[in-house]
Length: 76
Image 1: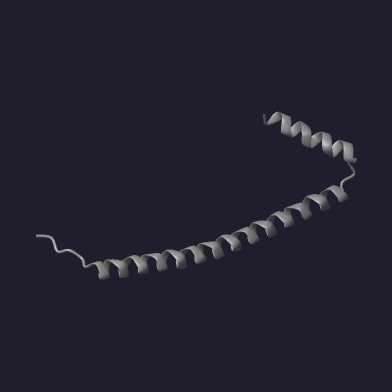
Image 2: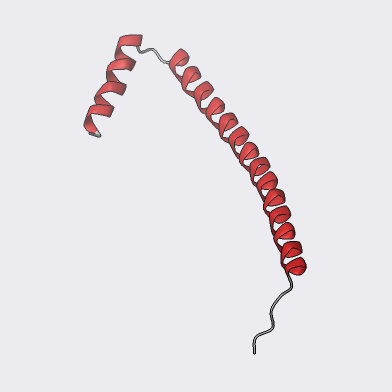
């Protein structure tokens, strides 16, 4: 016959599992925040590179905008 777990032992296991979930959620949230920060930094660097390239370019604002819009239309 299968051995049954006492109610107290079961409650302790439930509390431990809940505690483990809370700890895992805190760790997950911290890692997600770190990832978001890294992505934001990467995007800022890319934006700066694009702005720098535009500033150094001899193309006009309209030429650059038209080029980007044509590229977008070609991908659709």
